[in-house]
Length: 247
Image (tube, rainbow, N blue to C red; front, top):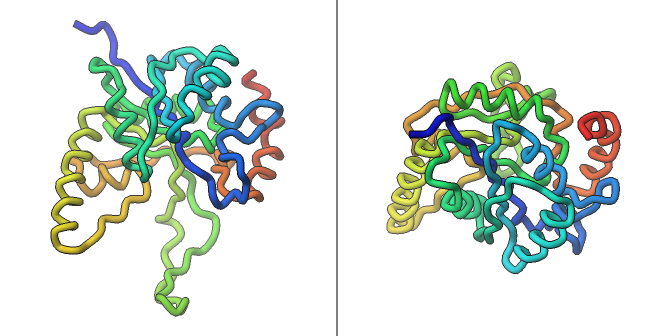
């Protein structure tokens, strides 16, 4: 019998980052002389609540990540480095399948969010254990307009109910596995009817195909995702203030 519950962090680093307009994938861009990917790995590996890490990378990059990042920087707790799929949800599923059988919870995080803090991860973990599924996010600051194909505004959405989802996105392993199995059935059925299933994040799968409610965990606006060249400038601006105090 297990003495305690176990948690795995799945770090996603399989994106190509085409919007960065760079030949170097965003997870390998340097931030204070270290690759962006390093920071997420290091932050999760130092937490007692994390028992193992699964790193999901693009095809052909596993050996590079093992040698040049994990071994070079002495990152601990990395159980496996596996290649991702063509879509995000496929990469996540490949990561989940590498998680140890006795792990109870998974926390899925984008490596392109290098400024995630230990405090936010710990708060997400508390909600995860209590509720079974949660997403880190922040209230939107802007007024959100819904438009049609001609960019005509069709509705102004109530800002007080809107949150911007970030990562980590966290689930009981059995819950997200259940949701994924249902999702794949839905995808096959949609294909038969000539339809497509659009999936943008992990929580969406649990929301649509799972049997547990997903809760929002207040995060930090500094948990920036590097997507465009402007984002890397924002991350540099926050780095000294936020990350160095944890080193």
